[in-house]
Structure formats: C-alpha cells, structure tokens
Image (cartoon, rainbow, N blue to C red; front, side, top):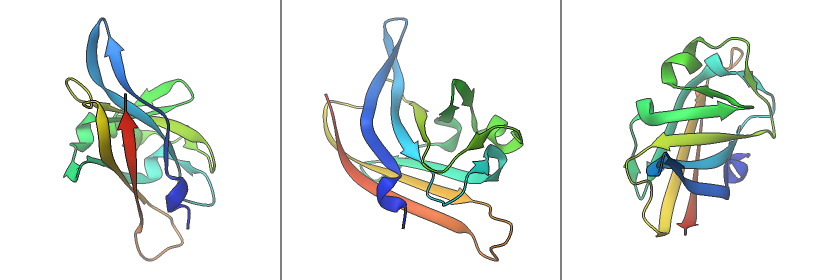
Length: 129
C-alpha cells in the first residue's frame, strides 16, 4: 500500500567527506500508517542493481541523529513517523557510479498486534549524476 512512497529519490547523492566519497544517501518513508520507535525496525535492507548491501553499512538519519544497526536496535525514544522522510546513508567506497541504477529497499517492522512479519519492499530506477 505505501510501498510506492518508500524511496524518495529527490535527495539521492553521493556523500563526500573530507574530499573523498564515503557512500551515498537517499530519502525514505516508513511503509506503515503509524510511526514506530526505531527499535521496532527489525531490518532495513538496501540493494543496488540486484545486489544486497551489508546491513552494517546502512545508517538511518532521523532529524539530525544518525543510527547504525546496533544503535537502531536499542533506540526506544527516537521514532520514525508516518510520512516523515529520513535519510539512509550507505557506506560504500566511491559511492554509486554515475548513471541509472535499480534501487531496492526492504523494511521489516515489528508490529505487536500482527502475528506475522510486516515486510515491505520497494524498487525504483534512479539516476545519479
């Protein structure tokens, strides 16, 4: 239902730190009709051109706070609200090459009242310049 809104490509870019490309980032929306605490995000999987990138390289940036996988699992106070665009920063030497890519995002949310996993997948063709 919300899958088509998950990937926000407007701010897709390679990230440069101290003159060197350290990775890339893009905006993402939560595929759920309510906000959740970050500890309820069981999995955030990013793929580029069909290749899944390591989860330990994916960082979630929520209102100026950056969380790695371990920190996200333990964060009870910060939330990702419905409709809010957060940035996903992926550590990747040299970032993404210029041109078109197939970007995938999978989010698994732990929802207490559901007896099954809430896994949502999105794919978009993106262009990096």
